Amino acid sequence: MTSAIEYSVIWAAANDKAKLAAVSSNLQQVVAQAQAQRAAMISTAFAAVGNKLAGGLRRFIAAQKRRSAAAQLMAMDDRMLRDIGLTRSEVPLVVCGLANGETPDVLANTQAFDHGSQANENRSNRAA
Image 1 (cartoon, one colour):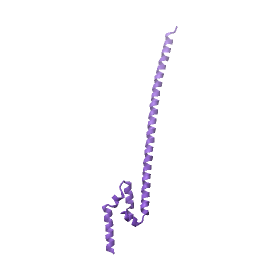
Image 2 (cartoon, rainbow, N blue to C red; image 1 turned 90 degrees about the vertical axis):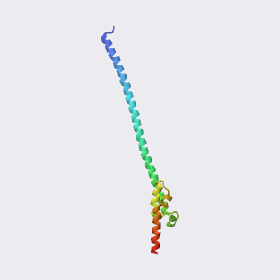
Image 3 (cartoon, rainbow, N blue to C red; image 1 turned 90 degrees about the horizontal axis):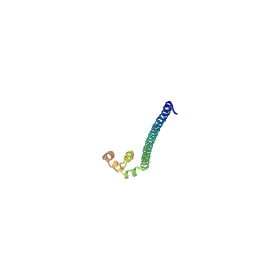
Image 4 (tube, one colour; image 1 turned 60 degrees about the horizontal axis):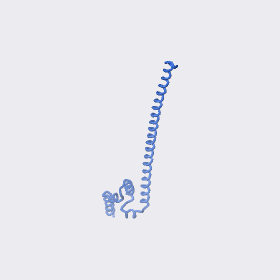
């Protein structure tokens, strides 16, 4: 026959197994949550790095386009620039305007450029 002490030992062991199973289940849930949070943080970090790289690449490409446009305009002679309504000193302004989404016509035909050109012509005519 089994004594009361044996029953209490068996009961304690069974109770410990139940507690161990509960602790193990909780531990597995905690580990799963930690792994999910870690994966989310890594994904967020890679997305942020990717966005920074993409932004840098876009800025680099835009700068290359501006340099190319400036080089093409500066390669023209003064007569060709005058034909399209520009002076050599206006090339950087036009190129910067292109970077901001404006067209060369908007910058080349502003009042400031027209008055400046007229004033220079008037001075040249008076001197002659």
